[in-house]
Image (cartoon, rainbow, N blue to C red; front, side):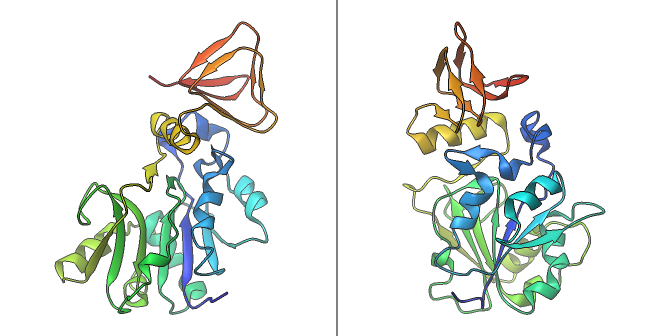
Amino acid sequence: MADSVAGVVLAAGAGTRLHPLTRLRPKALCPLGDRPLVDHALERFDAVTSSIAVNVHFHRDLLESHLAGRVHLSFERARPLGTGGALGHLHDWIDGRPVLLVNADTWCPAPVDALLDGWDGTRIRIQVAGAARFAAGVTVAAALLPWRDVATLPDEPCGITPTWFRADAEGRVETLRLDDAVPCMDCGTPRAYLDANLEWSGGESVVGRGATVDGEIDRCVLWPGAVVHAGERLERAIRAHEHLTVLVR
């Protein structure tokens, strides 16, 4: 498989909006349907490149164990570097290539190959959901950056969006609108995470491997090994284990 394009999955964030779930595991390892969010993100690159990096910081040991031997792991040891600094830290690995970028906590089953179709190699392409063009606050499904824009990012904490807005002011940003039939959901809060799971399942509760349901559940997410005891009824809830249940209203 070609490796002329570098795939990057951002997975180093603390996931504070997803607390208390992210006290147990990084948001990238929170299960969405039948597998962790990060595995959904990696699948998007299948038709494009096998050269993929994932940055890690919070719960680094769990992500390293899950991903070892599958991707290039970028360790942000001292501190998280943000969406821009993550690419700056990867300069040597990227080595002049364009970068296809996705967030691990955004569930979108669309492959990223559409961003490369007819690309001129100089413009930034941003794939967005639910909007006609890239702007502040839109949901970004993926982005394609030429090396010239990646090369200017420092190996220190910073965001990627200032680079996008500067390029937009120069007329170098091209927006690709995601088909409305394709889901693209930020899973950064318990409500959004639950809703994304229900979208994946068609509205049915999502029961992880080894979970036991002796009670009743309605539109819930049960993590692997979770138990709903006889006499219990859960509605719009996320049960991570016996000591952690998040009710979503």
